[in-house]
Length: 307
Image 1 (cartoon, rainbow, N blue to C red):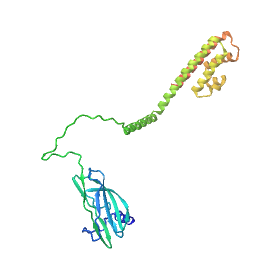
Image 2 (cartoon, rainbow, N blue to C red):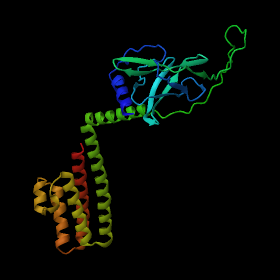
Image 3 (cartoon, helix red, strand yellow):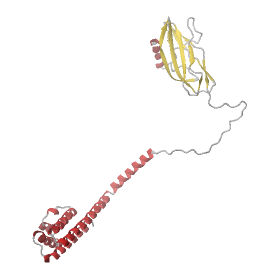
Image 4 (tube, rainbow, N blue to C red):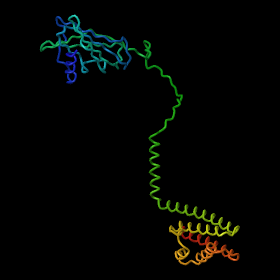
């Protein structure tokens, strides 16, 4: 089949039909090819195979039709060719063409010729026409019927399952993200200030609750340890509020930092006497006043920061 395949490629890939060939009856010594459909009936658009066989002398050059051949009323889809088989001095070439039809004729025929090369001349040899019947799926109209058949009306709604609209949801999500990002960029300062105010308010409430607890414990036990813890809590709170290192300052440094505020000076002087000296009974009321001064000063500083 090497010879046949090469010749088919020559005429098929070149985009031209084989050389003009006469449609006369076969020359002496040339047999007619055999063509047949592999099935007797076909539906519109259904794949259909047409087998073309040609038995000839081994020394003949034979060209089978390619995709440009006239397949009407059928449409060409593809083909399958088989190697040449030579037995007892006869060669057999065979090609199966895969076709489709969209015509509505009841009987459709096809006869594909093969071309035999004889020197500088070519001879076209055609098989007998092969027929296939069109299998109809719609009922045929009775003889003598006039006009179009009556149509049956059906207005009942058919439930349709809703589908998730991914493009619109993705576009909406992207738009929402852009809106959030734009709002964050536009109101970033305001949002940051509100968040900082929320943190300061929360820390201030925690400080007041813990400071009141230390004061209550001191009133119950009159212990210098509770006074020291209350002062340490006060320093740490003001260090965070002022964003400074007040927690590690001495009493003198704290008084100087707050510009010799009288409440700070008097309160820390009283608490230092309790922490570093001996607690006297008559000094208990002074310590209570020191706690009030420290709490009042912390509230004033909070108010000035959040103003």
